[in-house]
Image 1 (tube, rainbow, N blue to C red):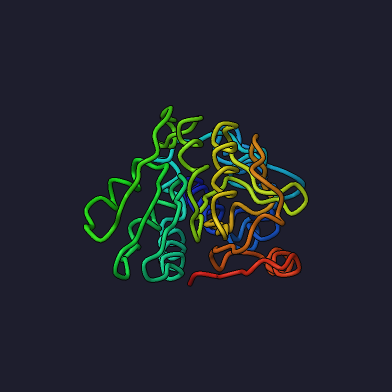
Image 2 (cartoon, one colour; image 1 turned 90 degrees about the vertical axis):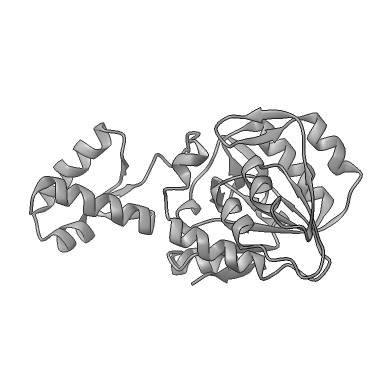
Length: 254
């Protein structure tokens, strides 16, 4: 097998599963462990993955900020399924908050209102998607634009939310760590997310399985603040059990 083909298989496996061990790659690629380690070293130097204790993960577990355009290319089918599962939780004449991120965009595409729906959105992309539906009363939050996420942050957004009440918050995160909590890569976004959580009766996390075991720079809240997590079948049995033991409803979108 050519090196380029091996590299492609390795990266595809990382995108699908979030992490992969050297031993798994030896079996999958039918090559020696020395060859696998050389491939991983080369890909790490190219910034494609991060090596740690006999395995590789897609990026450093201490997450760096990435543009939402780049994120949308990662696990698109999983995110589409997560978005559809999230949309099914919306009730008749509901009122919801949607935050920012590529998985939240997938939710926006999936929303089909039952009668009327009120949506407050921090995401410019999600607002543009939802604006085409006349059954949605859409409120776009204002504030400072984050160019990487195409969403707004800051005190103007927070002021609007403090005077409102919603049934659900749909929140995308960059990391889910059972000891540390849910995180993002921007402190301003984390502060806005905290205010959103205070304005909603339920917090619903939309996150593909690669987000588990990772930490962003800015903490949004502890795991006890989360009511529902919607993820894909790539979640490990260990992580799924941990979610359920915390009393959080787990929905696996297939």
